[in-house]
Length: 89
Image (cartoon, rainbow, N blue to C red; front, side):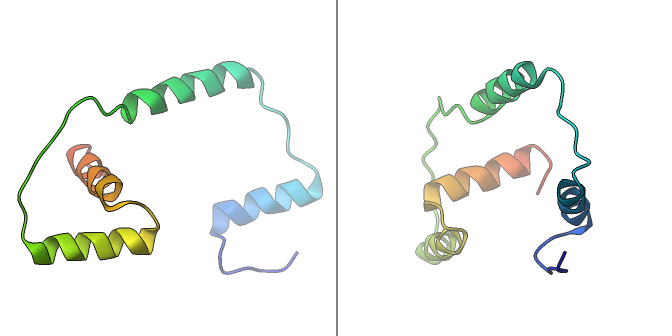
């Protein structure tokens, strides 16, 4: 296996286990996937509207950063707000 700077230690361990054939299937996968899907849908449900006024410089910077991330700027702004209020920013 080639060492690749794109992967962190955990990802390299998973890749090594995959290549060695030592990975084992997860039991109850369908139930776990449904639970995670429901949590994701509840997290990203957009049922409220927020209108704010910001400086044109801040908006241009926000749009530029969103472009770097490859996502729409409103999605990027909502993600930033979510990370902030949930304590992950």
